[in-house]
Length: 97
Image (tube, helix red, strand yellow):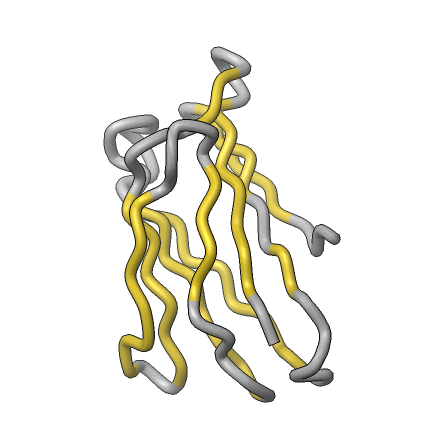
């Protein structure tokens, strides 16, 4: 299984480059990355189960210093993409492809 993310600053329409993203399973840190110049990153495949991605968003939002997204992997062979769209007072995410 592979896991990727993409973070966009919806206010400026630009990628959130240099953001730290942490993958946890059962509270245990499994991987930590910094988004590239395009706001993208690949993380270790977490396997089946419930996992979280925590995005260090303080440099992009004074209201949300971090955003944690919980997601469930049911098919560990499938690629999972968890993007984040961020603005100063709101964020959204979805299951990408």
